[in-house]
Each structure stands twice: as C-alpha cells, then as structure tokens.
Amino acid sequence: MSRDLVDAALDLLLGGCCAGCGRAGRALCEGCDAALPTRARPAWPTPVPSGLAPPWAADEYAGTVRALVLAHKEQRVLSLRRPLARLLVLAVAAAVPVDETVVLVPVPSRPSTVRARGHDPTAAVTRSAAGMLRAAGLDALAVPLLRTRPGLQDQSGLGAEARARNLDGSLRCPAPALRRLARLRPAARLVVCDDVITTGATAREAQRALEAVGLPVAAVAAVAATRRTRAPRDGGNRADDAGAEAGAGPLPLSSSGPTD
Image 1 (tube, rainbow, N blue to C red):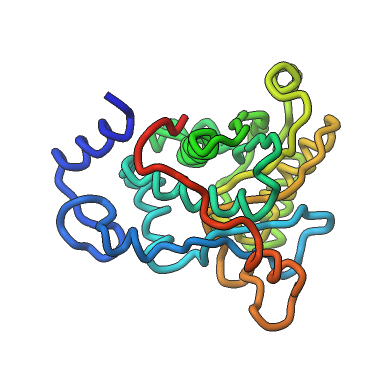
Image 2: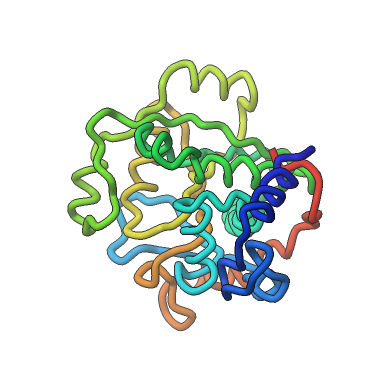
C-alpha cells in the first residue's frame, strides 16, 4: 500500500475535515482542491536579501494554502503532502527549465523540531514534488544536502533582522552530501525548496551554504509566500511577471502514482 493511501486511511480513521473550508470528510475537499492555483509567480521579499536567487511561489501564504501548510506541518495531516507538493511543482516549473536535470534541495529543519513534530514536512513535500516531476517524465531528484548547526533558534516570531542574525552561518553542506550529489547528478540545476518564503533570509542562507562548496543555485521555490513578498502585478519585475504568465504550463501530473 502506498504512503498516500496509508496517510488517507489514517486521516479517515481518526476523523477529520477539510483544512480549507472545514467540511467534514477528507483533509482537502474537491472544491478547495479545484480552487488551488495552477501557476506560480515571482516572490521577491521586501527588502531583497543581497544576491538572492530568483524566488517563486505558487500562492500567497493566506487562506486555504496557509491552512494546508499549517495542518500538514503542525497537525501531521499527512495526506496533505501531495497537494502541497503539486503547488511546489508549480514553483519549480516556473523557476527553471524542467526539461533539464533538476535537483531539489529542501531547507532543513532543526533535528529537535523534526523530533517534536514527528516528521520533516519540507523534506517530505520536496521528495513528493520530485517524484511528481519524474512521473511526468522529467529528470528530477530531491537531495537533502544541507544540515543545521547547533544553537539555531526557532524562526517563528522573529523579524527580518533577527532572522538574518539567527541564520547567519546556520547551514552547511557536509562532504558526504556533496559526494552523493556528484554521484547521483553531477550536472544539474539546483533549486532551494521551502514551504513558505517570508523574509528570504532562510533561502539566502541555504543558497550561501551551497555556493560555499561550489554549488550554484538557480532559483528558490516555495509553496507560498507571505504578502510582503508577493510581486505586484503592476510594477515590480515585469520581466519575471511576463515569464510567469508565459512560462511552463501545467505539467501532466497524475493523481496517483510514484511521488518519492
């Protein structure tokens, strides 16, 4: 039995409701699922961390998407992994040419946070997104290249400056991970993946850690971005907006099949 079926069965047995509208039944009802975005947009923070790779997100961190992220992350509604992965795929597809080899690098959580939650939501969603891309015939792989340093604080509640100070030098790419990437995909476009872009400090630190060992980062992709990071439709980076509108269309992602 696939992990998707196991997750759905657990949600059904434990009882639940739609994370989006509260309707009793499945964790994401058909109506809320159909209303999810189908294209990603640029998600530049304000201010932009110096040197940040182009960031993309599927939607604003609000409403149904915010509810899905929180339910999956904090309440372990594991069946939401797949719809969140579909949203991450939109951001990846907008960020880089998906007909090339792509390596998705999840932003790591602190080990203590993973233990407390009982899972690593960003890593799981990133793996699932890579599996969806492969199922669509694309060469994509999720590789957890990054590790956190001891003493890293929880980012929630921290402002932009505090986040930047907390994250300074907080991530590293150990040699075994680097060797693994060289063995699996020696030439690939790297995309840093996260659930939510807020100030961009986390993505920039992940990018710094990868570039410090000679791995250039092509883009940043996220499920959602806070309102302050949403690129305006009028003004802002019009070239990026045009790219979002004219970029890759919806990928042929099946509703079932391999996700990891």
